[in-house]
Image (cartoon, rainbow, N blue to C red; front, top):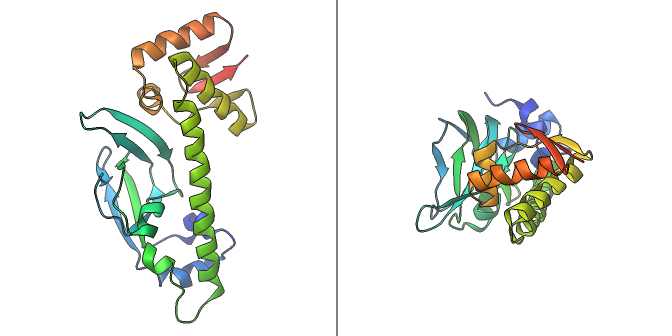
Length: 217
C-alpha cells in the first residue's frame, strides 16, 4: 500500500491533503517496482511515459557518451521525482537513471497527470501546477550545473560547486550528497586529480574537509 505520508513530502503533492492525494492517485495508474543498487531504471533512448517517484532509496541521473564515459547530473533522494520532463512530452530519455542503492520506485502516468479527470477535481488541478513548478525548478538546477561545467580547471569546478552548496545550505559548513567517485563523475573530472586539488586547497587554507563534510574558510 502506498504511504500518503511519503507522498506529502514531495513538491509534486504540495498543498494536497491525504484525502486529495488518495483521490488523485486513482487517476494516475500507479505502479511500484523495486530496484537493486546499480540497476537501471531508465536508459538513454527509452520512451518515457511515466514519472518516477522515489519511495525508498536514492537515484542517480547520469549522462554517458559513445565511449562509455560517465558523468553524474544529479543525485535524487526519497520523495524526489524524475523523468517528468521526458514523460510530459512523451520523449525518449537523454540520460540514464540508475538506483544508487536498493530502491523502491512509484511510477505515475504523466499523460493522466496532465489531463484533468472527468470530475475536474481541484486536487488534480493543483497537481498539474505542482508538476510545472517542479519542471521549472529542475531547469534552474540544470542551469547551475552548466555554470559548474563551464569552468575550465579542476580547481574552478570544485570551488564553483562547493560555493553553490554553501549557498544552498546557507552555511560555510555543509555535507554534500556525493561520495568521492560520484563527485568526480558529477564534475566530469579524474578522481585522482580532484583528490590532489582538494589537498592543495586545504593546505592553502581555502577549505577543510572530511569525507562528505566541507567547511569553506
